[in-house]
Length: 294
Length: 282
Image (tube, rainbow over all chains, first blue to last red; front, side, top):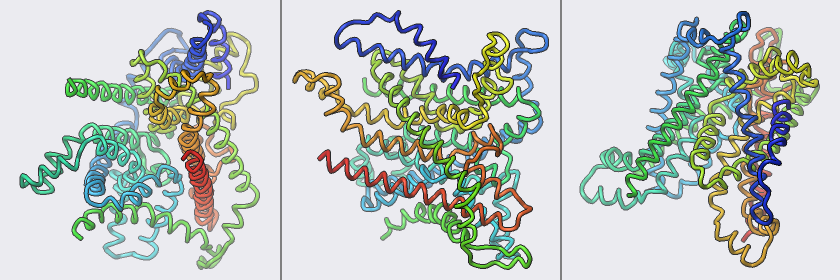
């Protein structure tokens, strides 16, 4: 509440300075109060974290030592690389599964649309911790019932700690709402039916249509879906932690006890880098959009 | 026939990796393991256990926290979204806020927890500033309490509200406002009779999403308070990680089933509200 209280005080002292005009224009003033208060609330923790990591409490002064120590920190390289690989695999698998499904549902099977929509939205409201409890129960079938069968071997292979494929499989489920919505928006925006019919009439096969017509039309949505999925996997903690795998977020929590500065530095850096990437994508997206429309 | 086959991978995938685990969890919540013989049997023991004592408190704590943060996050997020959209000339600010919202709402709670620990935790920068330099202290506030959790939860719930409600706000046509103005409506009348009714269903829907997100949050709470607060997600993790008590795994399943049932009730209520408002609108 402190951050909030401070924010209110800060904006309150500013408010009288904004010119208050009579009539309709006056409604504009509350906007600056909202922007000011929430701006403080959102910026203060980030600013404080940056100060926390660069300020040397013993000698005073500013040091970037904490940030320089990140790459060499114990376990960081392993956990971060693992998270990156998991994210890439999840993006590929989610797109392989959803692009054909969305296209097919839009063009050929509109009556399945509601079912697909409902199923993809389920992970949005279903608590991940409930899902992972179920996944643990299913995984425990391997030692309990299937011992010494190929199925048990497959189950154990999925839980290889260096590259836990089971995480990829569940992350695809968690990413479904974002991937579906991004792709659906793209499909609605483009006249996909005419384009695919033209391609089919010209003798293109369905795989060919997917690769040379659908994907180029959907590239913005695909990019959006891929980015959201990537960020989701990089930040996912619940499932990795309950299943006992070390990924980037579980690593941060593990080292936070012994290296508080490092954990804060990595946290802030990951937030800012993700934000910068998203800004870059949205800027690229916009530039391409204006070029095409002109 | 062949086209139906094309939709098969999706339905197969969802069945195996979403419906099967949830189903197994729901069934096994009714199993019990005998502590002496390790014999398994059907039992409602776990289900009964989660409605009493500390588990009941955990459900109530989680529900209270989620309702408060969802309503607060909904109101503040809506205000922020409206404020951002009104600044039509300032496209840079708009894009900065929308992309930042995308990161904060989707990236997960661990980094947020540590940013707040660095700011207003026990040895946080702002805590030190307030107590040592200004001599004020935090006024009894602790980051490691329910109030503290609420402050951190809002850090990802407000952006989530901004993201979900912005499309609905953009669909609000300026012509409606102009028409209302020309007919002599005041700003309040416009919101009461035009803007409000049109926005009500998406706002309620987005608030429900915030509730679900807050109810399911585990990472932030775990990173911030360990397991010292009464929250269902923390209790589930505790039950799963305890190797000492026989049958605690089943307790975890029962607790998870309880969460799914509660979310189901909330969603059913939401569907009912949605149907009513739609009938009223048409």
